[in-house]
Image (cartoon, rainbow, N blue to C red; front, side):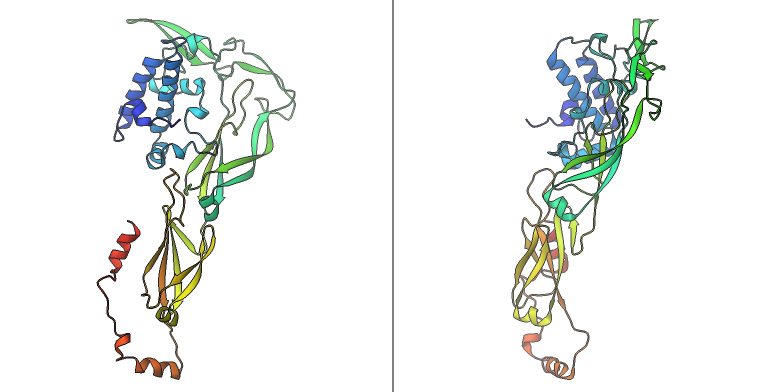
Length: 374
């Protein structure tokens, strides 16, 4: 089932300001908050949808990528997710300190379903850069990379935090002119984990974690672009106790190709031919991202002509087909000639076959550039 548009979920336009997006999310969160709608699965679903939309649209970088690539920028077939696919209710409540004016985790609410849910700490994210060739980007690829991540040390045990009794939060009730207001703040003793270290091995850190090298398999969908960031949920650092693992953020780095240049979903190839080949016609083998292909060059081809090979470019990250391979014909003019060759071309100076006769169908340079982007 296709995901709903994030702007539609919050009821704002694409030109909405950060303040308007924040205001729309606050309205949705108040309306569908679990404490106001106990045991209402539909309200819970809408609450999570609004949180996912706000997570993307409130971040300038994520918003820009969403506007350009849609949901594919965060949730491709490779298991990457930028929204609720990698969020739980604790992630959502962690936004409330900003949305509801700094009231800690709950902002006037209990911070869970009916105040009964324990807050779970999330481990920190890992960030890695992944270099990809143009062929890998065009065809999609699965990469295995080695990373060092924090994991719970074997033999580490935890006990319930005596300060918050395992809830991870300290609840305060204050009297205001509007009545009694309940607020919640993260427990300073356990950092919100609800647990403290009981026993740990000597090599573990203060949180009972150790560094461990691990091989992670990452599926890269076809059509990614340089600078795009993908998320592998749960492959970041683990959290102490019963916390949840952070995520791995994979930044794509596109390597230069020896003969092909990328422009969006289109590719460009400079093909050089000799003057005899331009006059008589020829066939040439050229590079593509799926291997070499042979193309025909008609007799009398003009330097600067662009041959378009449709569908030989890069697949669209949004699934809108493939770009084209644009082959730029360059006729190579020799810089040195022997006497016989010079005599031949001298004799051709006044020959009508060698006189320029551009036809109406021969496009100017600017028209060719325009065609490249059409």
